[in-house]
Amino acid sequence: MSENSECPRYRVGITFNLKQKKDDENEDEQAEYDSIGTIEAISEAIGKTGCETIFLEADTSLPQKLQNLNPDIVFNIAEGKGGRGREAQVPSILNLYSIPFTGSDETTLCVALDKGLTKRIVKSCRIKTPVFFVWKNKDTEIPANLRFPVIVKPNAEGSSKGILGNTIAGSRKELINLLHEKLDRYNQPLLIEEYIQGREFTVGILGNGSEKHIFRPMEIIISPEGNPDKSKVYSFHVKTNYQKYVKYRCPADLDPDTEEKMSRYSAKIYELLECRDFARIDYILSEDNEIYFIEINPLPGLAPGYSDYPMLAEYNGVGYDELVKAILNSGLRRYGMSAV
Ligand SMILES: Nc1ncnc2c1ncn2[C@@H]1O[C@H](COP(=O)(O)OP(=O)(O)O)[C@@H](O)[C@H]1O
Ligand SMILES: [Mg+2]
Image 1 (tube, rainbow, N blue to C red):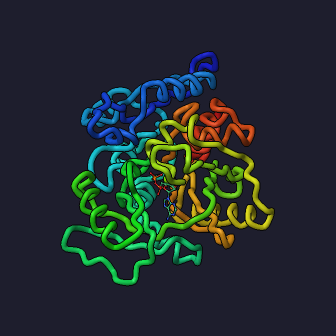
Image 2 (image 1 turned 90 degrees about the vertical axis):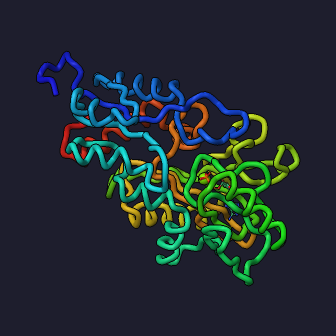
């Protein structure tokens, strides 16, 4: 860090995995990766704080780049490559080199990427989550007592990857077809989950400990009639065409008790999984007013004008640049470094 106050205060690395060219056959294959526009927006926001930024694509040359460029802190949004632990790759490398970084550590990112595992943990603190079963491979027997309809999704994906085309099965026969189709395509265990009819919400969290802020919930309203999937699922197609098919309402129209409960659950789950700096949690509120945890994103997308986390922050009065700065400051404070 420079001693001269006119120079950038910190050298902030930004670690990321870039979206490669779109493959029409597998349109959601790159869903979790970032576009250069997102990295530039983050860099611009950090630049406004007086810090210098260094772009660090998280490929196999990352260790070498970190050694050569030696950032003071890393703003990590890298999703990693390959396997259930992929989001842990970059945090592990940063820890290996004792480089501070924003966001959750490798353990939290690994656990949260495994939807079934996370649901088991969340259930243990008596927060409801839809009944589920992880179907590992073609030899796995499907339980007899499933209640239909169910939704099927890859167990370890995000950004609506795998939530493409038909994802809901109304009968055992439909389920078997869906499982085989999805296994061929995604080649990983599949989560079968009871489909909960109701309203969908997402809650953003920013900061740590007693200083953390729970944003007011955002409702995601999808009209089944108007979209290609003919369902209320926030699917890859619906999300990528959200201007056409989705209405967002934030703060959501919720009775105060339900909103308080959703916020309290969010704080609890965030602490339970030892999240750091920021995260986003998805819920369905059933028709009988029960809150069901769906998943947590400790590395939520930060694409300006697209991702839900910056969108809900904006509705809550925190603009993009301010949000990026707050995440950075959260990270800096955890390491005992001065905020920018
Ligand atoms: N059990 C469920 N009941 C009803 N809708 C669900 C359920 N699980 C997922 N969905 C729908 O599917 C969407 C994507 O599921 P989610 O687990 O959040 O995957 P992703 O990691 O891709 O965001 C949700 O936003 C919601 O619209
Ligand atoms: Mg989700």
